[in-house]
Image (cartoon, rainbow, N blue to C red; front, side, top):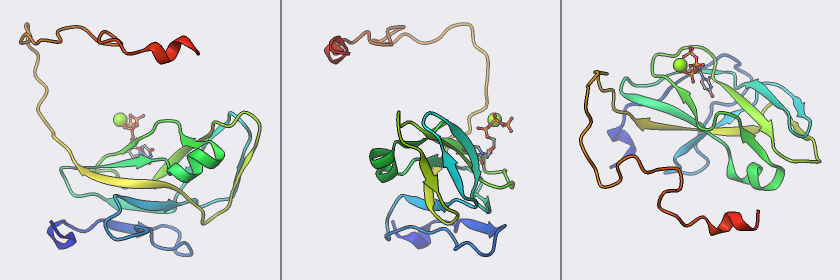
Length: 156
Ligand SMILES: O=c1ccn([C@H]2C[C@H](O)[C@@H](COP(=O)(O)OP(=O)(O)OP(=O)(O)O)O2)c(=O)[nH]1
Ligand SMILES: [Mg+2]
């Protein structure tokens, strides 16, 4: 599969002074998104931040907004609703609900910082139908720890 197999990701810059978002390396899954404003996140606080772009995703795809792992590991910066869901028909500004998960240190973000990454994936769009019965499976209704392996929680 080569890049020209895919339809292009059409990005409109609402803020022409910011660079066009791009992949840091060819083949990277994520297109890095810029903060359109300066902000300071106190520990434990969140803020919706504009990215200065609007996009037109191809029908049958979804945009998923993921945190950047370096900022998460080094500063505790994450996204409240990670991954954020961008619908193919959405034409408004892409915004990111950032959160500072660090207990002690504030995080200062400058306009133009790369704060998140947009991953475009194909998505199934099944019709929704109501049924009275569901087919049987080996798992059945077991979930939320039914398979065990949670000894890690004992120390917590
Ligand atoms: O991190 C995000 C998540 C969503 N959106 C935009 C694109 C998406 O298509 C729209 C709606 O998102 P979602 O469906 O997650 O939010 P909702 O609370 O269900 O709003 P709505 O009622 O508009 O669907 O908001 C963003 O810009 N950033
Ligand atoms: Mg919705």
